[in-house]
Structure formats: C-alpha cells, structure tokens
Image (cartoon, rainbow over all chains, first blue to last red; front, side, top):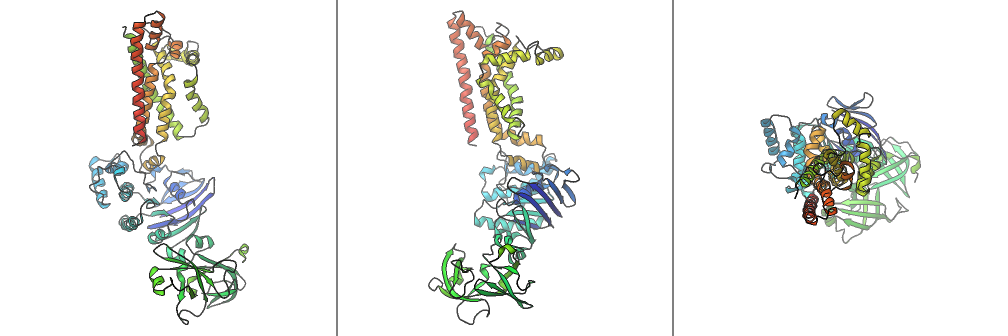
Length: 369
Length: 220
C-alpha cells in the first residue's frame, strides 16, 4: 500500500528511510530530531529527497531515477501537522471546505456538513480556530484533511499539545476514524505509550534510519538491537559473555555473577546484551516464591514515583551485576503492589529476574564489559 | 489657491501607491519566500532610496529614463511615452522614493505568514496562485496596507527626485512640494502657510493610520 525509500543529506545527519506499510496505522516512533517528521514531509511532497522512491496505493509519487516528483497538490495526501496549521482567518466550515474548491457548491456543503457531524463538530461551523479548544482544533485539522478523501493520512504528533486526558480520548477517536476510513496512516510520535496503544505496526526511527519494524509487542519485548532497546525503555541493559548454551537456555556471565535466559542462537563465548524490562522483575516476599534462578538478595537504594508507577533502584548485597555502579537493576511497580508489599517501610528484598523477561541481542566487539 | 498642485500630488501619490502595491508586493513576496541569489545586495538596493540624497536618486532616474537612457529610449520608441518633464516622470520618482517604505512592512508581513499554513494548503490540492490569494495575502493584508499608507504619504511629499526627473513646470509637473518652494521663493507666505498645513495633515494622518494598522496586525 505504502512504499517509502528515501535518501536525503541534511546538515546534521543523513536521512535513509526504508519502510513498507500496509493499510492501517503505522507509527513512526523515535526521539525528536530523528527524521520522523522529515519523512512525512517527503511523502507529502513538501521536502524533496535526493534519491529514492515513494509509492502510495500503486501511484508513484516520487521516483528519483525516473524523474518523477509530483507536487503536493497532486499527491492526495492528508497531512495533519503538529499544531494543526488551521487557517486563522477562516471559519471552521471554510477550513474544512478549503480542499474542495472547484466542486459544485451543494456537494461541498454536503461533504463539509457530513464530515463535521462525523467529527462531532456540528454547531461550530462559524467559529474561528482561535475560538476552539485544542481538541476541537485537532478534529478540525483531521476533518479538513479527510474530507478530500486522501489515499494516505499523515499525522505529525497530533496530540502533543493536548493534556493527558484529552489525548487518551482522542487516541480512541482516532482508532474509530481509522476503522471508518481504512486509509493507510503514518503517525509520528515520541511517546512510547501512545505508539504502543495506536500502532498496528511500529517503526522505530533514530538518527535518520528505520531501526526496526514490527508489532508494538515485538518492538518493545524483542528489540532488534541496543538502540531500539534503549528507545523503547529497556532500562536494564547488561553486557556479558555466554557461558553455556543449550536447548533450555543460556547462562551469561554478568559482572560477578550469572543470569539464565531463554534459548537464543548464541554460541559459548559470544558477547551479548541482556535487555530486561523493569516491569518484568519480581520482588519476592518469602523464600521459595518465584522461579529458582536469577535470584538476588539486596536493598532498594533509591525510589521515584510519578503517581502512576514506582521506579526502584535495587542493589545486590551479594555478587554484583554492575560492580562499578550504585545499583544493579531498575524495577517498575504499580502503586497497589508497592503498597501491598509495604515497600515504604521495608527496603531489604529478594528479587527474581524472570527468564521470560530477558531478551538477548548480539553485542559488538567494542562493547566488551 | 491654485488647486492644480494638490490634485497633481494626489494623482501622482495614488498611482505611485498602486504601482508599489503591484511591484512591491511581488518583490516583497519573492524576498520573503525564496532565498534569491544576491539577496542581500537586492535588499540593500531597495533600502538605498531612504538614505541617498533625493538629487542622487533623481539623477540616476534621469540617466536611466532620459531620451538618451536605455529605458527612456525604449519607452519613447515602442510605447511613445516620454517620462522626463512629464507627470509620468513624477510618478516614477515618487514610486521609487516610496518603494523602501512599502517593501519594508510588506516584507515583514509576508515573512510573518506561517509557511506551514501554505504547506497545509498545498497538501489540500490548491494551486500556488490560489494559496497566495486565499492564505498569504489575507494574512499579510494589514502589513501590506500599512506599507501602502506609508508609501502614499512619502509619494505625496517627494521633492528632490521629482524635481530632477519631472522638473517644476507650473500647471504641468508642479506638485505641492514644489509649489511650496516657489511660493516661499516669491515671498508668498500666505499661500505657503496654507499648503504647508495641508501637507502636514496629509502626512500625519497616514502615519497615524499605518501605526494603527501595524499594531492591529501584531495582535490578531
């Protein structure tokens, strides 16, 4: 449905994006300045790549070799920009009708009314953008783009300027709209939770490249390399050598101790990174609970909370995983678990790193511990 | 009082303002939207009339537009238009003198239009001309209007360049500014007083208007 291959030399980095996307919602996830927005601008025809090819629904929009570069006007792309770029001197109705110029007046009126109803904007036709709330502005921008029946929808951090509650509500609405229109959609965000919630496919972008494409679950729980692991919040990345390898799993030397992992195709002696998500570590109340391997006894040396979860830094009292650092593992707990376990009063714990919670990736030779 | 100088000044200033609106807007737009080769040279050239002595500006125009000048010869030969010592010459002198005063605010106003609005309009399928007239121009409108008002005031009062190009022919090319000079030379202070008062008001009102327009433009 959507085939993007583009090369562009930029002052700060080189953009080298290769991405295939089917119908449905593809999230481009990555830090600011990684080239996500540039990619959208290239698809829309607002930025001309040095080389490459962009095909949407069988139509070639750009092909450097064939000398094809359709102007944005002919690309049939719906683009919702970060702060919506609504026309401030026009009413809501005029904004939505803007892309329908040249069509019969009755048809325009009908199409605009239908779109405003769908977006729950009826009654606001005569307002100016400045008289709308952030969420309403966002919906007008979406309506203005969708009313022209684009073949691909581009959304550049459309919820970034909104507060958390509204953001959640609009994410749900976007899913509904997405199902209604079935247009291939590229959605740019640097918010992992947003990416995870919305994405049918998630592409991790950093430094101008697509590092990994997959379902959100694949990307978050089986990152292809260290950069994806870090970008998707694997807070614990431990580096070590494989000691034993069998069908039941690996044991890996980490610092002064070892960890057991599920089976991965690495040979004895290979240098690997273990990515451990902070949610996958279990605090143990009584000895004998949890899996027998990967257990550590120690102390919580630091804790932080944002009200929604607790982030704890754990330091082993026995053999250390990270002897040079102040702590060995980072753990995330929901508040009810924090309260139930009474962590506020008791800082000495045993914990278990579930082998299923460990993902093993190859480490370059430069990453020797 | 002879009304001819006042009517001529009004006519010259009106045509000069219209010319500025057409040419000046186009140039201000080009400056705001593209990085042209020799951009800073061009911007310097446009600002030059504000600091050059009017006689120097007038001399350049005379050389360029006179019957021996390149442009003057072409105009006379193909269109049969003579610029020097006619009111057309006064229009050219006033247009060029007022040009920097128009292009300044117009440039700032056009540059102030968010380019992403134009980009959004492009993805919605509208042509570049449609975008200019429905997005860019309306949003820059107040700034351009402020420039036009300033240009009108400046064109009304031009003396030096007009004198060099159009001369000071009573009943043909004598504008208000020139008529005031003649009246003072002839010791006719009563006429001079009245004309000075009219000129002062006709300059003060546009200045006040331009300030108002640009203030409103900043707080939409």
